[in-house]
Amino acid sequence: MNIRELMTSDVSCCQASDSIEKAAQIMKSVNCGSIPVCEKNKVIGIITDRDIVLKALAGGKGTTCKVNECMSTQVITCTPDTDVHEAADLMAQHQIRRLPVCDAAGNIVGICSIGDLATVNILIDEAGGALSRKDIPTGSRS
Image 1: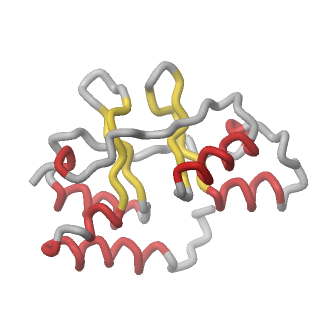
Image 2 (image 1 turned 90 degrees about the vertical axis):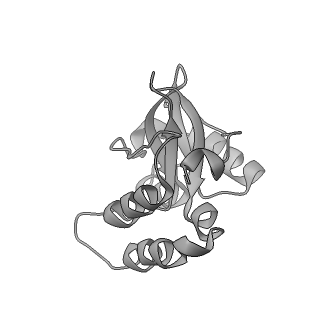
């Protein structure tokens, strides 16, 4: 089974120049905790609700802070043809909950979450492994 069969293809994105308030409003409207940051349909980063709180608000930057001031720029992606087991392994290895899906030209075409993988019975252990490792504190992760 490939990611294409599980991914959400209607992806909401923001731009690096958007305020974190706008990013948070997008997250609220689609009921999620992170969104890709795109430029001309190419993923250049990802911003999470945690990034907004810890890097912007707790850092005293306020809601007018720009997305590019607190987004993560090292984004792990996959293609629509990526095997679901490989995607689960990527999520576990990199301790991430969402995986942007990009076509051969690098354009975002979808996103796959741990929740999407968990809907496939054979992936519950793999997806759960990524979740359990996500909550282990490390000094290098924000």
